[in-house]
Image (cartoon, rainbow, N blue to C red; front, side, top):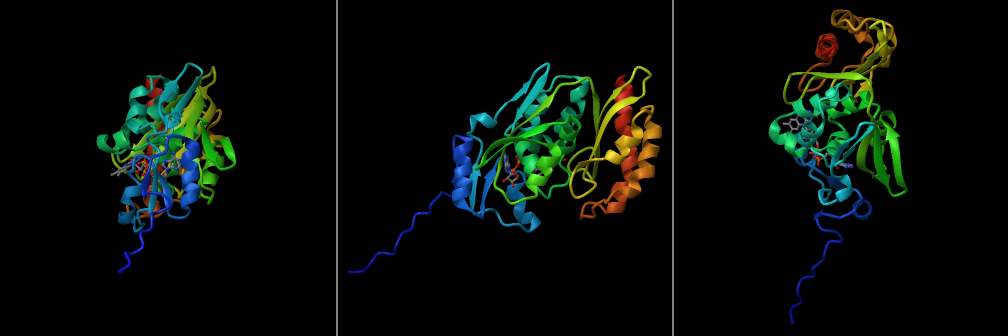
Length: 288
Ligand SMILES: Cc1cc2nc3c(=O)[nH]c(=O)nc-3n(C[C@H](O)[C@H](O)[C@H](O)COP(=O)(O)OP(=O)(O)OC[C@H]3O[C@@H](n4cnc5c(N)ncnc54)[C@H](O)[C@@H]3O)c2cc1C
């Protein structure tokens, strides 16, 4: 009698679609290395074009109700990790504190990508330096909800950026932020597709029209998006004049560590940044 070859059933299917965050985390742990979450798929499935293999096992997040939706209240806002750029752009009301995020969501990439790419994917595509939502969320002092095997936590953006550089498996569940009296703007170049420099800005003015509080976050300039605190410290108390702010950015640009990549050399990113900073201030000044 001939023996039939042994049939082995994989412990988990190549693509699973759990219904809860806890099930998704369990699948990520069970799968081990080579198992990744998948949201809009616009980054992970293009891995081979960057010389990265497509993961052996994928845990799709699209069926998890908790990760969906955009809720913008008068005091607070919550955006689910699976909210697409397009949904965000359509859901954000026309309010000064939300202009940076609305432009980050509505002007990034192209319409097809915006319908697929998600908040969680933008936050977690480590290695993608040109993510528009990341600097915009930094300007909003957003907090990122994450789930790990140890439980749930809310992290500020600096804590989140440190976590995503580590090896602990985690899922982003949502972003939250307080609504505020800040005015905000988002300037990027080029106008579409992958930007080579991004300046996200949020500020309040004092009764004399000078800058009282400010957040200026840079994307696509250094290896990771970050607040430009050296600029913020020098800008407080000054007039938000676009030309003067561009000049301040020019003075301070030497302190940046701009990244050289295929799309642009580092010196070019640093060179165009002051004009972008001036443009972001210009958007705010024009809106009054
Ligand atoms: C041609 C093109 C142009 C683009 N231009 C821009 C642009 O100008 N600006 C911009 O901001 N974006 C742009 N994008 C989108 C950006 O490059 C990423 O592809 C996108 O942000 C990834 O989102 P996603 O939902 O598709 O993530 P996926 O590709 O599904 O996943 C990306 C990574 O995040 C992880 N992940 C996803 N969701 C979660 C979660 N909830 N918790 C934990 N980990 C998670 C995945 O495991 C994976 O490692 C562009 C994309 C393309 C293809």
